[in-house]
Structures are given as structure tokens and as C-alpha cells.
Length: 518
Ligand code: TRP
Image (cartoon, rainbow, N blue to C red; front, side):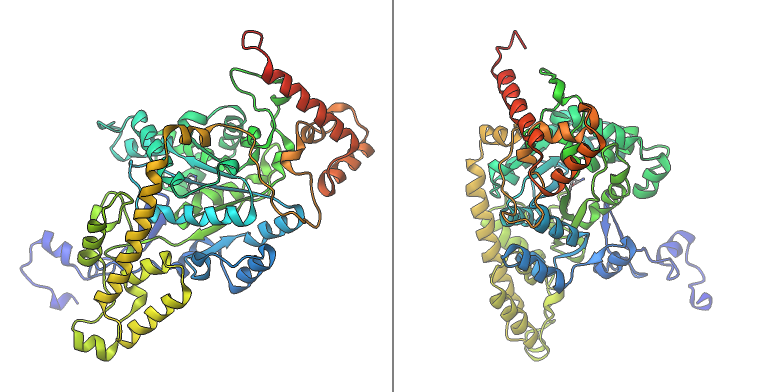
């Protein structure tokens, strides 16, 4: 190689064209998503098989799909059928828990980095919504205004730019929540919050305990922090982790929290009965580093929690092609949920990377490649009809369907999805938003025929606790054994049920008490 080097090239130019320049590996973590960059500077498609290896997650297999369909009696969501949700950790265990005990909690979230969401942001929420409907389970949605504030300030070398104060991120969170709710979540089973508004009570206690389980070295290892990273960002991950614990939200399950203005004695201790119920997190795979940290520590909490299960998606490809994801900071890479039909059409026509051939003749003769075709890729996310989708892929490969035709089909589908969304978004008022954000007992049924029913958290009342705090009531070891068996397999012991009734009455009285008295 040295002999072919231009003798007189100035060093600066040489460096930038040096063919020996090491290629950049693909980088996927909560703060970076990019495919491998080769020596020529070309970005390659994200290699998801390699990601499975690197992260040590499991691929989602046809067996999982059939098990899912057997347990729920419902067909798997198109995003699962098409391997867009493609990997998992302990997804089987969630199905086991659902079969045996009847319920689990769903948890997902969003970092409100701006007020507008794009098509890619809706994907995990659409999927989560369907899981919630199928399983009939509670869902919490976390908006991490704090994370985005800390991250942005960190990125700007410690400077707080105009429009990037904590309040600004709180406002983004509110806008995003309205977008999320426009996707149609069932209010009875769904709680939405922002960290700035909700942090406190048992949630904060879990946070503090979790923070004590993560060292600086471990956080740096997972997220690439260094000595210049602000300490808020370093600690932030603990919140995103403990948000997966039911014990962070006692009020959603009819148990008292411990917060101003009403400090109920029964809420002083975190509720052990909630700690035993597992959680499933549907999310894009860039969030996995958080939850790896979480899973390693679930069992070390004062009240051990089962390891959180994950079901992980790919990223919605940028318009420019499969080396990157849609990004809000690059308007031409993304379709926004606020785009007009014309904007959608223009963006797809102008920017969507095509898997078609150079010329019409070539395309007719050799056929196109739907796998890298962005219009086709979007259809695979949003078009429900399997047969039509297969037909499109097939026709494309054969050269019967042209790029323009594929784009046209994609434009129609996205225009419809976005228009429907916008119509619903208009209906989401501040009052609606606040109703979802009010901590309250959620209503859900879960699996109606569990094989080894445990006391449902909704039914637990304060008693699940009385039992869970162990021998606080002075019970003998034997009685304890009986109780825990009852907790595992039945609806609680007689004593527990009685205690629950009493606690419920007491809570009722407390709630009815005039404010001055309280
Ligand atoms: N950190 C996530 C983001 O930047 C937001 C988030 C919080 C989240 N909790 C989550 C995402 C749980 C998925 C699942 O978008």
C-alpha cells in the first residue's frame, strides 16, 4: 500500500483519505445508534444478529410465537410475526407467570428530547398497547424529562442552552404524553408520569436503594461515562431501572404510598407483596444496557424482585436507509406525527432509500430488493395484511412492482396512519392527560384461569402486606409458612382477607377525612 501513496499529499488530506483508517464498528447504546462505517465512509445496515451476540440477548423464535398464541389464544402482533421485535430476555418466564399466576406489569417509556414524536417513536407503544389488550394487565409509561435535561446539558459541555431548562423538558414530556395517549391506551389500566412530577415516596426509596447497588465503574462501563459526566446523568439510570418494580407504584395496586400530604402508617414500609410480581418491558434494543444492570440487581433489593423480562425491537429505519434510525434532530430522516399528507408524500418520494434498480429495464429484468427498500420496510411495520405485504415483496423481487409503486403504497398507508393519529390527538385535552397521570388503583383482570393463582395485587389490599412484612404481626414460623403458601397458591389466608377488609375500611375513612384533620 505504501508504494501507491501519493508522494506529495499533505498530511491532513492523507489522514482523511487513508485507506488504512480503521472502520468504525456499529455502536448501539441508549445514547448512540449507528451501523458500522466501512473504510470508504459508507454506513452499513445495523447488524441485529451481531447485536444479539454482543448483548447476549436471546432471539425470538417461532416457538415463542406459538407459545404466545397458545397462552393468549390470540395471534401474535405483526411486529412480532415479522421479527421487528426480534429478541428478548426471559420472555418465556413472563408467559409462565401469566399462565400460572395470572398477571404481570408492562413498563415502557420515552425520553422527551423534543415536543414532537416521529413514526419510529410510536412503534414500541403500538406494540405495548396490543400486549396490554391481549393480556389485560397494568401498564406504566415513564417520561424521562430529567434524563433528557441531564443528557442535553452534558452533551453541551455543561452549558444550559436557551429552551433546555428542566421546565422545557417537562413541557416536551406533556406534549409527548398527549401523542402517546392518542395511540389509544385504556385509561383504567394505564398510568403515565414524568420523573419531575412523580419522583418521591416508595419510588424514590427504590431509587435510592438501587443507586447504592451501582458503582461508578459499573455505570461508566455500561454507558461510557467519564469524570466529566455530570453526576445527575450518572445516577439517572437507577430511576429508569426501578421504574420496572411494581413496588414503586403502590397506589396503582390499591396499597398506600408514603408521600405528602397524607403519610399513612401502613404505607411506611415498601410493599413486599408487590415485589413478587414480574414485569415485561417492550422497548427498542438501545435501552437494553439499562435493563442488563437492572436484571443483575433485582434479587439484591431488600424485597427481591423477579428478574425483569424484556422484549426488544429493531429501530425504525431512517428514510436514508438501514444504517441509521429515524432521528428527531434530522427532519429529513423521519416522518413526524405532525407531518401533513403532502410532507409525507414528498419525504418518501424524495428521500426514501430504494431497493430498486438503476433503470426501469434493469428493474424489470433483475428485480429489486425489498429488504433494503425503505418504503417496503415501513410497510412491514404498518401494513397489517400479511398477504398483501408478501405480494409486494414478491412482486418487487420479480421486477413486477416498481419503486414508484412501492412508494405509492407506502405513502397511502402512512398518510392514513398519521391522519387517524392526528384526529385522535386533537381530542386529547389537558384533563384527559391528567386523568392518566393521577395515581389511582388500576383495573385489570389478567389471565382469568391461572393454574396456580396467587393473590392478585388488586385484591391484596393492605393485607398482602401485613403478610408480606413477615412476622411483624408476631405469627409463628408455621403460620408464616401457611401464609406464604396462601400467598403463592391461593387468595390469602382467612386472617389476611380479614386484615384486608379492615385496612380497606381504614383507608376509606382516611380518604373521607376533612383536610384540616388529616
Ligand atoms: N431512556 C428512554 C429514552 O430515552 C426512556 C425510557 C425510560 C424507556 N424508561 C423506559 C424506554 C423503558 C423504554 C422502556 O427514550
